[in-house]
View 1 (spheres, rainbow, N blue to C red):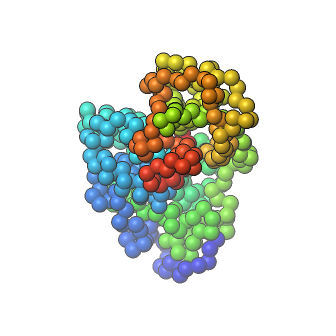
View 2: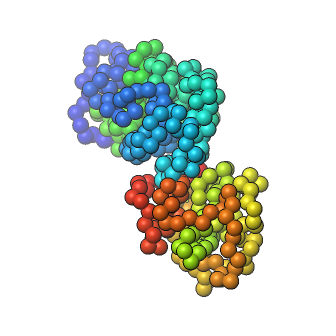
View 3: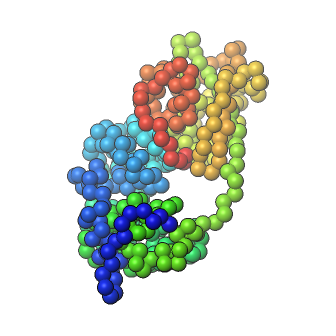
Amino acid sequence: MSLAGDPIPRSEGEDPPFSARLLDWFDTHGRHNLPWQHPRTPYRVWVSEIMLQQTQVSTVIGYFERFMARFPSLEELAAAPLDAVLSAWAGLGYYARARHLHAAAKAMAARGIPDTLAHWLALPGVGASTAAAIMAQAFDQPATILDGNVKRVVARHAGIGSPIEQAATIHRLYDCARAYTPPNRSADYTQAIMDLGATVCLRSQPHCLRCPVAGDCVAFIEQRTAELPARRVRPPVPLRPVRFWWWQRADGRVLLERRPASGIWGGLWCLPEIDGLRVNPQEALPTAVPIPERMLPPPRPSQSHGRFAHRLTHFLMQGEVFTAPADAPLPVATDALRWLAPHEWADTGLPKPIRHYLDAQGMPLRETSMHDHGSL
């Protein structure tokens, strides 16, 4: 519990409602100049909310601005090929979000942008909290959000001590969050409670004496901010070795394989995998030729081309790349196998470690941000 900062002045008698105190704080201390707030259109709010799923605002801002420059309207996003969308998303992580964003854009281009919670929930990639945030932020309609920041604020303020991952805990958090939500100033309130979690009610060392709702916060009163919200004990992150082929033609083009739509790095282009990390191989995109691991003998240590490590959501990948045998027949390009030149890679959706690996081979890609906050 941080003691830094000046305490919020307390009035005599009963505290005003949670929402009133929070909105007063927001008017002075909240974030009012985020790029999706100016202009605050349904399209821009929707894109920002998808990007903000499991990703911090500070990381999203740059990606959002570049994405809007490339796809300034819903119609342009819907008309773009998926590869262009994945390329603009590359490095942001959790790539299923980009695929869902593209699919939802096509649906909205055909049927119009929704203006009800139920219709937003029917779109790919839009869950209950995201739909509520869109309704509040884009339409100023009362809605209950429950993202990571809000869960932390509510768990501490209400003193909810059960593990935050449990379904019963989520229901309790939602009931509390709904009770806190005011009937008006919905856009400001939802931004305010997210801002409180992001700037004051931090995961570690929260600035409790600067919090507008600390006066009746159970975690603050009982000095339990370090233990709330409670989480299950997580097992150690497992290590997973993954092997890839390095296949390069005389003209400098390198073989890349499109990942299956489901599973790790879904829909992105990657060095062909030897051992098959695919979660659902039966859902892989069809190819006209056998995949490389069925064409070549097992790699030998002498073929090692290089190594890399990359932390994904549920495991640490230990990647090793092997040079394909010189006497092996070159695979034929298909919808899922492509020979790409270095100048083509910058506009191709590539996972962060593959971008780095290609760059390390003396084939730098066009400068791009390399923050990667997930894997799926």
